Length: 389
Ligand SMILES: [Fe+2]
Image (tube, rainbow, N blue to C red; front, side, top):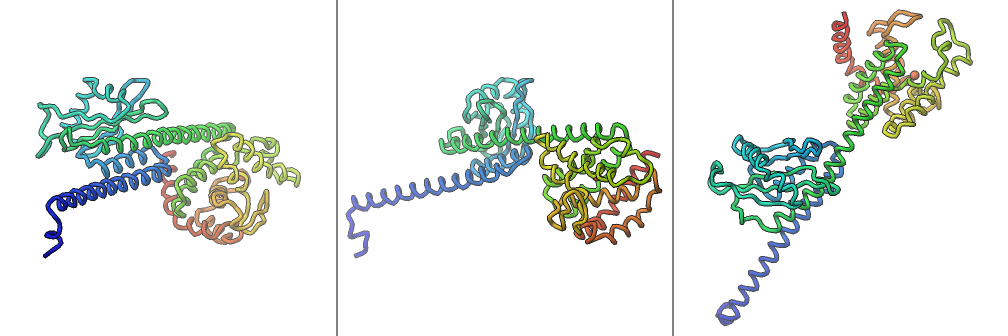
């Protein structure tokens, strides 16, 4: 006699029903776990995504994890023009793109935008066939802080009724989180672009009386960008170093012209005045909120690796890394440019000088990186010289 025979038919049915219910609960738990994992991934990764391109790519990746689609389009809505623009797409063939265009023309997408929740649109009888089965469009509005900012448009090879409430709720949560991230990324990019404008405007103002100063600052910015790349600095830090290189001497605006233009040797008091340009520049840059990360670099760009620099006499790694890059680029630029009191050094002589100062004036690691980037720097200079001749 086996176990099954020991139970009556009614008990067996009840047991089977019980097992089925347990399997369903299990499946539900598995799906919930997958969704929670995906949402955790979303909030974790969205928080670190600074650029709009990265946020949009993540949104498409995570949507595909939960609702596998054949094609996806991300449309951003522009409040001023009341139009959509296609910002990112995957698998969008000509017929699907035409369908999206038609949906825009018919006002369907505007209607979907107003719904504030995902809507499922069946493919029309006239739509081109989608492989073996039916085609459905899922349109998810992106709403941030009560404002419609765009749509996630998915083309899914499923029947209209095959979407569960769970699919749509997941897409809704995903869209809400992504919308906030999109707004933050846009804000961040606006701040970045404003900062670049401010840096450019300040740089131009600082070099208004001396066009060669601006050219030198731009060359230094190119040099520190190459150094930052060679030293594998994170992109945000590289941007700060580049901007600081453009503005490192802005404090010279506060140094009397008579001192700056004096042809002969400077007196100790005049040297003291020139040296105030680091603190003056740091004060000026620190007054602009988005430029505060530049302050330590502007302040310490005349420190020396051996601690004999100014204004603070910082030594070795105490000197902010960006300031060490600027110090080397500044020295190289000054050595290879013609000055009122001496001719420019050749690139090789300047390089010898820099190598001699490794571990004294300069960070040895930065010198090493400089040796690697010098050929690129020389090529850029040659191009610049050819263009100006
Ligand atoms: Fe300086």
